[in-house]
Length: 296
Length: 305
View 1: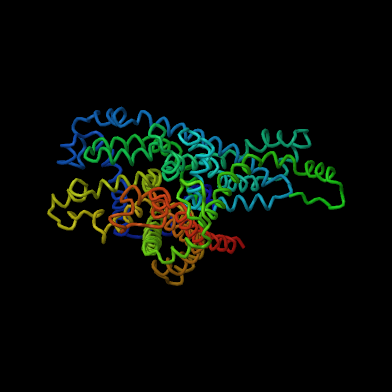
View 2: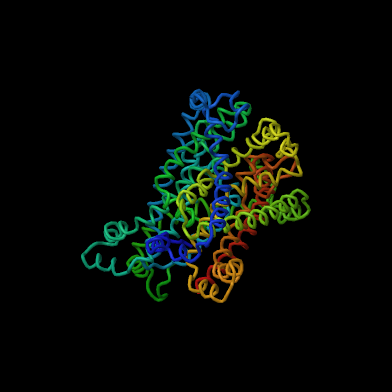
């Protein structure tokens, strides 16, 4: 279920028939439309914005004027969240997890997705069933033995405890998405490469992979949000404080500094600022990625 | 997996298998191995553990057959959790889907500010479940939260209630946060679905004298029905699996007022060390997710025909 933005773009290009035909005749309904849209805008943005502002306020300011823009921004909250709150540790952890999981999932999904879409092999059905099971099984249904497995593999208390299971859990969806993408490419492309004397690997690496870039970007972005925001997985598998990612650290942070709202807000800001920055840059891919993730 | 003709000697069959499938096997090998070790094996192991009374520490696992399953049928807390899941599935799908559809319809014609609205409506999705929970917990928190303070300022008694500490309100308070989070998701998918609606039919209906509401109900919604079904099933599965936002806001409390099967399973397995019983609970969730997913696949198939 991947709805391509292309269609919407085409619509926009021809001055959108919808725009002409549905435009209400009078000003009243247009005003109403914007009133509703703005009301929702406030509903969505107020919680996020007020917390961003709190990060720059003293406790007194939060108590007296929770929604006002701080007169002189207070940097102390961010500094303390970074040092006392140990975000100097958690943020690099999350970045490491995100990079490791996203690259692993993208690379391996490309390999498997390509084989599934374009190469003949015995046991295809078995492999497909494994992918399907991986898509359907909820994490809660495997987390208990997974904990003991990771412990027995001596990965508890290392970065691997997050990276390896998270990558494995991302693979079914990745393989599924990428194989759908490869299937949409014309078959003749690979044949041309084969005639030119490339091996299967050469065809994959030089011909197919460059063409898969749009699908790969979608997957990378989806996997990035998923890894950055992962919560239950590290809650079960990452138990040493210094290995925690931001999303999980925030929970313990909140319990420890309940009264210090400025600092909690600073922690939230440090968690979401990088995400929002990337989101603004790669908006279209984000929306496509999450829409594609609808399957998961 | 070898399915070559049976009368051939094994070595020949293997060589043949390698020639036809070898390249593909190398391509899928890492994915295959990781999925088997970290998904399939734990899943099978979950089922096995659900037939034991293991506590996570002892060396022996006593096999007790279906004992855990008999126990969970009579477990009042499980039924209460499932009831909360059902409330979550109904309200957590109906409300955000209808609001998402409203927003999608309002932005369908791409009015001025379309991109800004879409970007910002989708923002909660980027923030993620866990952070949403933490933000909203601070909005509600007794006395020091945003809402109680607003109540103080305007002297509205209703807002002075401590929503998350009140067993009658906590679940709905958490649901409101979840709705805030999920509207953007449904909005974006439904907006994409609207791009496929046939404009000619709408014009025809207009000429036939149908008003806006009739056009929406009789022309637009039927064409969107497939997307709406898909989105509904996704919302239902989401309502079954919900964990992060409840854990960050209430941890299932106060009492067990916001307990769902996810939090209950986690508590049994990792807090109370009833690993066997926790595994049985996780099997219940897997079964329910499987049923819902199968329905989903059926619908997708029908939609593709």
